[in-house]
Image (cartoon, rainbow, N blue to C red):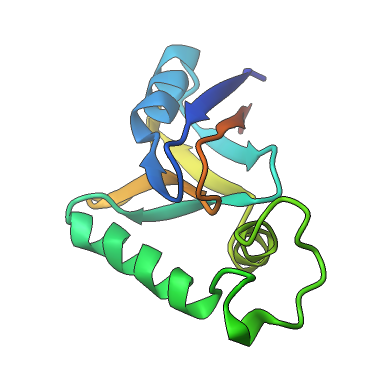
Length: 141
C-alpha cells in the first residue's frame, strides 16, 4: 500500500489547492481501484474538497469562517482561555474542529473520483505562514 507525505507552505490563512500532487501520487501508484485517504498532521488547519473553478468560492469561504469564528481579541470571543500563540490560535483550533483533518476519495480507473469542479485543499486557519504536512495513503481494493 503506497504512502507519501507532501508539505504545503502556506502564506497565511486561506485555501491551498493540492489536487495535482494527489492526482500524480495516485497515477504513479498504478492502482486502478481503491481509496486515497488524506490526513493533515496539524491541529490548526484542515482539509476540504471544494470547487476549484471560481476563486470567489474560496474568498467567500474565508469570509464566512472569519465571521463564524473571529479572532480571540474580538469582544464576542472573550470567553476563550487558550491564547498562548496569539489571537488567531484558538479560533484556528475551532475552525479545524468544524471541518475535517482527514478525508477519503475513491480511486476509479486509476484516477481520483473527484467531480468536474472539485479540488483538494489545505484550509490554513492561522495568519502566519506555516509548513503543513499531509499524509496520503492509498489502499488498493
